[in-house]
Length: 278
Image (cartoon, rainbow, N blue to C red; front, side, top):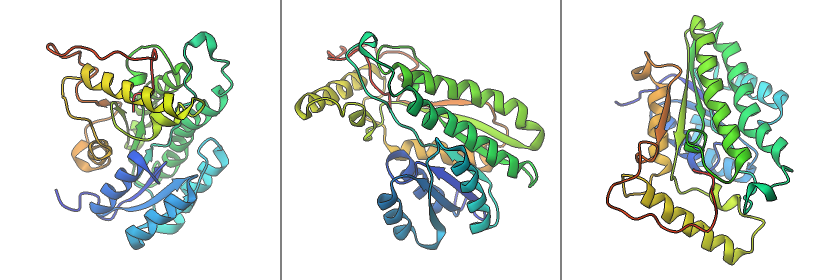
């Protein structure tokens, strides 16, 4: 379809880089005007300059509810409405060798960005949409919230909570013609995995990142890596009218990882028990 989002206004949190940037670019390519909400000011401003008048930047820490509310107001003031809210912003937290070594020092920050940010974005976007004919809300989880596993426990818990929240919000908001759906990416090469290893020495971090990526590849049926653009296609689908009969849906974009292991490939050895899945 061409211009699938023509005339629509969207907000993408965490839109300056990675999956968020791919979603911003895809939405704009389909005719939407987009607010790029992020704390990465330089990256976001560069993106907005490259996209022209179809986008604007709003500095937003989604862990701050007041900033999320102001971001929604800004979108309405800038473009005259809000039709699509993509709650994409997320952080991994620190990776530890085992859960017994995790002091949970980053619990509050991870939950504030990953879960509170999604809940606040949904709440304030829905408050506008409820009085203006409805809309679409797209929340970003992870296959780390679908499948149990070792490592990055706070991250996994936050992403699992997003799935439950999405389904619950879908039930409550249907009366306002607001659809709420969820994407669970997996095995998408972005900076998220490396960010979780910042406390490690560079050499060990690089080695572990490569090992985890190799393990992800052997654990999924499709051999090729996923891309941010693959996730952006799912975000476009949920945002547009093609998904008008879908709400409360969780869509893994993971090369089949959550379906099960491939039959004829051996698993690669991994140094750590687990890692962020996207």
